[in-house]
Image (cartoon, rainbow, N blue to C red; front, side, top):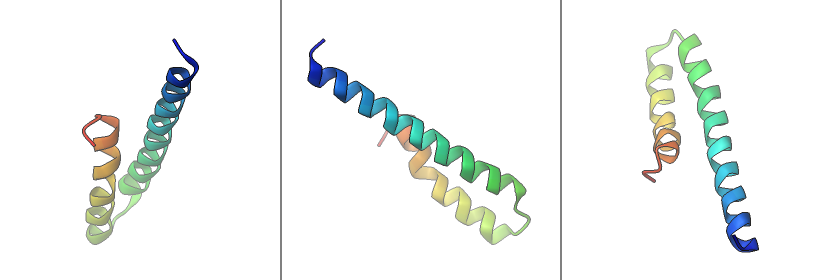
Length: 57
């Protein structure tokens, strides 16, 4: 494995870990909220993070 491939792998893993971290934070707030409009907003915000973790975007 070359140096550039190793760096690329490290950056990819860091991207997925940061996406998972922010998704977990949003899910935590989503579960705690009682306002339906806030819940809808949080669910819309979660979409790009879920897609990133599923490697669709």
